[in-house]
Length: 395
Image (tube, rainbow, N blue to C red):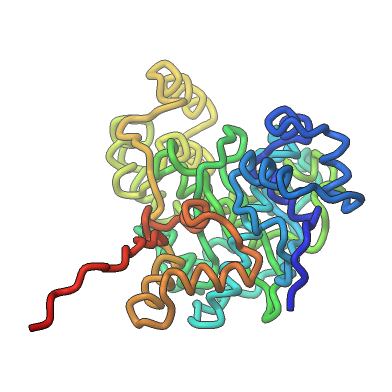
């Protein structure tokens, strides 16, 4: 039988999950920062009343803090877009949220078969010298070839990708999205080691960003998964090396979403006409700016033409919002499908599903789980049935 006692590491996780410092939590609860620190490090334990204050302040179920975390997922590294500008607290918060997603995935694996990870074998040499033009050109060509190899491996051909989220999920990469409440984090990817192997997760920030940007974010994170090592801490590499990896992921995303031949043939008709790019935007589901950048990368427009077009984009106010930009949300994802299947086939009820998640350490309110997994609102809602106390009279 599990011993129920307050566990400091759970308090720390809950605090980081909500993105709060010890000072902020102290101000909300009235408990001193020093006491909270002692609780987190298991040097002291709060009484029932203080534990209730903490649970209420962090909006976590009380029992979360009394539960031993038996599901030990291991995260080696998380790639964040704009690592240099996002705070360490923000990165820790989002990484921790994704660990809850990973635990949910592992729990669901007990009941459903998710698509297996299906990535081509890639050897990427890259280039560490940004001032060596020849090596840079070779690196770009190498990434172009890798992007083509991934498309071929997945049978995508050269056509525009209509549903990138579905393609990623079909090939074993888990996609979710939630509001990060952080302007400096567009997306992030994470490799988690579970009992049965590795799994890659991509999370995008949704709520305000248009489709073209979110699709580019997903392709950018795919670039990290394909090109870069996952066994070293990003804290140990230089800022220059990180920037290079970001650039490489951008080149991959551009080449993957806008293939050299098919996109190149399309754009050559009117390569300097921004209205034509508005039409191409609907076909390729890419931002005007990314397509102009790609046209320059393919040498379809010159550097001078590129700079002029970017000035026109700025003059039109399209840097922040392009024509036809509306907030884009992911489609129902693989988690929604798995949970709906379990419910429809009467394998699990909502209460039993939530109970199973608790056994994996995901002791969260249903609304939090729905947000983390990008589920439809109300998916995990349980209607409380009031027992009937009035009966028909028996004659």
